[in-house]
Length: 81
Length: 401
View (spheres, rainbow over the protein chains, first blue to last red):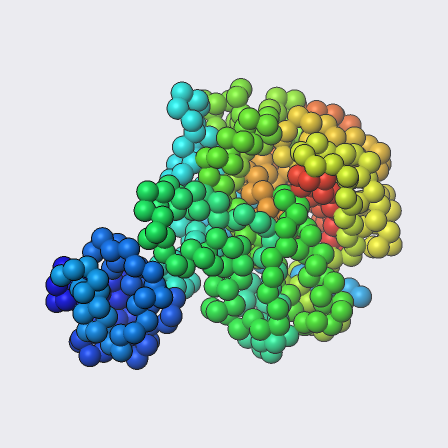
């Protein structure tokens, strides 16, 4: 799955998990913590996205990315897209 | 040191809030039916489980928290919001307020549903389930939403959980740990596995009234054949009576007793029940002759009712009026004692006793049963019994304000 589609999945999960962000614009350069997403919500968002992509990756392997765009890139690379 | 009750919040089959509970108690509408909540389906080819289910609680939490809050937590927050205002807890420093949530395995039905939903994709279990499977999740949601910073904990004693939580609250107040202690009898949410086990053990009814849910719950009646589960939840605020205006006092906790029966299962032990009452009376400086009203544990199981009547007889409670709140609400399991202490306090305020539904032919005519018609009565000293599996017998003495 390509990075652009994964970014879309992540944004949808962010809005589901944090209803406060339902209408808030979210860009690739945004950082989850800066959007007010707490660490438990971050895990929920990523795990739900992993399931949609069909990817099984330990959470500890996903700590590098500095923003949502980079997270989408990393997940795309791991999914072979 | 006198301990006073200063707030009541409650939810039951008739709705959330004191007006709905008052209607349930004094009008005694039939709230019983087939249990319909997802995860409470009876085994194939067996009669459905009967009992009482409550309407959805009002939204107290913002959607961000409500999204992952259990049904039991949302009911607890509704009762907490109600007592918070009544007891004026905004005026007390947050670090002088404590919270005790009564009950264990409170969210079993939702856990069973999650287990089913993720059984073939365990790797995707939501991380949050790591704190949601603990009963303390209710403590967390309550203290995040309300300014409670003294302490928060859960206390378990099966169907006597609420009584033991009230005893724990009085200990915290007497020790000076806090100035107000909230006790929540959180809604126990059993799933089909738990309900079937309770039915198989012979505790939960009701084979004889499977087609008439409204007649099936019959505490202390000759035709009783087991308890019926009922969703309910309540919160109480306890404070040292000396700290507050008399006008704010809804009732006083005069004495309490808890005895370990030395048994593991559901079998009730009258001698232990008597001893719990004697300890509570001794602490209150009263005798059984001073008790004018008994709110029974009275679940409707043949063994439980018979044993409890033996206890009344041994104590010499023939003169007292007695009713059974579970005949109206069903049996809320770990929430029962808090819900029923709320019922005692509301009957005290109203000067009347609620009906005992379906009490048509009392097991023993020698007692002052309040039948289906209710009664006028000014409560002076109430005795509240609560018993739990695992050999837990408790008694509370509650005095008029």
